[in-house]
Image 1 (cartoon, rainbow, N blue to C red):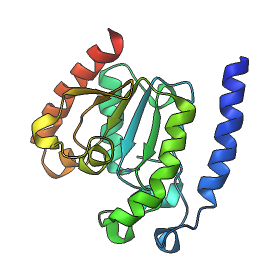
Image 2 (cartoon, rainbow, N blue to C red):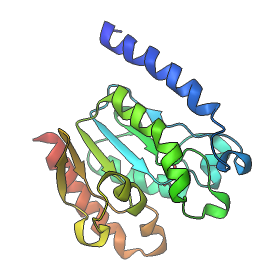
Image 3 (cartoon, helix red, strand yellow):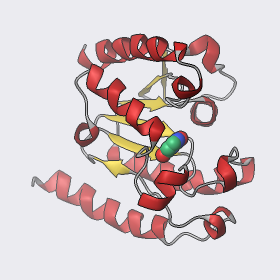
Image 4 (spheres, rainbow, N blue to C red):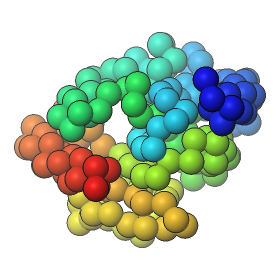
Length: 189
Ligand code: URA
């Protein structure tokens, strides 16, 4: 492991320890465990979801349930897999009954996400769905902006629907597969 990677890893492990022992808001009370994030610290691309669902809450891994299976298909369609990317969420603990995370919870919890980004330094961030989009680029509407790229603070943001939408409405599958082709072009050019 080169020096830069080992420094990153050291920093990340310290951060991870703080994240998994966080009790800063009430979401932790209803959750089985904190789901900090997973993947390669050297990744140039980070995918950011909303928050853990029931399966993620049980297993401690982001996107390991039904939405995650479709995310794997999307990743595979552009030659990516979990080992090549980093996945995290806006909130690290499951909101009760999968309700939307509240503004206060997002405010408290995203201090962790900000530090993850600071350590990993991705070139491209992919907010998945409206909660993640609203955190990075408030005011943008996912229905109008999916597939678009924005540059902010020296980083590119590729706007994508959340993979769960394709579980509720199958017609989003093709939309997302086609958006991911654009993501492929973005990261390979
Ligand atoms: N949905 C999310 O937004 N994140 C997960 O980790 C799982 C489902």
